[in-house]
Amino acid sequence: MILSNITVPLLGLVDTGVIGHLPEAYFLGATAVGAMIITFITWFCGFLRMSTTGLVAQAFGSENQTQMFLVLSRGLIVALAIGVLMIMCQVPYIQFSLALAGGSEQVQYYAEQYASIRIWGFPASLCNLVILGWLLGMHKAKYAMWLLIITNVINLLLDLLFVIGFDWQVLGIAWATIIAEYTSFILGLYMVHKTIGLNKRQRQEIWSGLKQHLLDKAQLIPFVKLNRDIVIRTLCLEICFVFITFQGARLGDTVVAANAILLNFLLLISFGLDGIAYGAEARVGRAKGAKDQSALALSVNTALIFNGLFAVFYSLLFLFLGHWFITLLTSIDSVITYADQFLPWMVALPIVACWCYLFDGIYIGLTQAKAMRNSMVIATFGCFFPAWWLLQDFGNHGLWAAFTIFMASRGVTLGLHYQKHHHKFV
Image (spheres, rainbow, N blue to C red):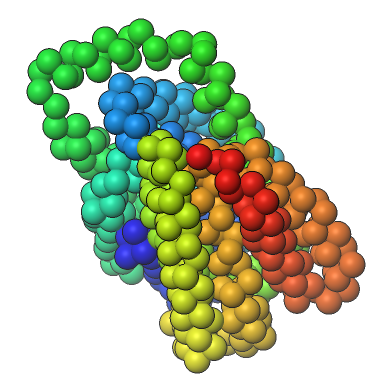
């Protein structure tokens, strides 16, 4: 899962590197703003993957095949509904988002071009979240790995073809991504089919159970409550990321371009560490489904050790190679000089943030979304925004300091909650 997860931010780094070597900073800034408009919805819908993984892992642990497919079916229905709704509402959504983002005329123009193409990929990208979550919950980590790697390699090659080969600039990045999303959807459905592997009688039994329980109120209410709490949690996280991007846009093209590079570094950190968290989700969920307290403790303790080791590795990586990474992603001197000033935050963040990534995974496996929600609300409105308000005179450094405090508070609140309540979870 670490190997597959790293392909996601690496793709973002390639996107940034391809655009970052175009002659003007506003191309990079526009891609960052346009991507944030799209990923706001994708990340907001992260509940589709999270709840699917937790519920399916528990069904896997209790060997409840009907429940495994009920979760998949409900998730895909919700994903398609949201995707179609966003396409229908694309014009007001994009215009409202651009008005909030601000930025120069060029940033606004190219960001609108980018978002207007990417929004057509929502049905596929949201269904992909469900399929990925289902594969993880079914302990098909190799399938999930190959799904992500193949999809992102396709995206990467199309980036190079469309932007460098065809000179499509920002439009090339958008078209490459949307083609990769629909390719991933088709491949994901094939992997689900391969995973099922049931005989005719078993398929008929599961299909009968789906028709009987898909809209069962007794099962739908816990499903809705779980997703409600994850949605609130994700919305708080999204608000913070969007605030950083949009606030950077208001500080100037160079700032938003530099922050786009730094946020891609942060995604490299988070997706790599999330590989450990994803493994914890599946194992913790399975332990809960099997009602095995010792397996739960072993899964958590093992994940904690590897989480800390990889966090130290990331910190050392940015300490010694951070400047080189920046020069790979852009050739604009003003952006390089400005981004260099913020590398210390990239060195500190893996150590500070690794705990919140892991505990998110643990709590998803336990389907304890209420605790995740409360932790995120406290971190966002009790820590991030008050810290930014107090530190805003320090400009972009104040923004990154507030974000670091935000990540630390998430890990602390969830860690304390787990220590107090872990014996009640199984």
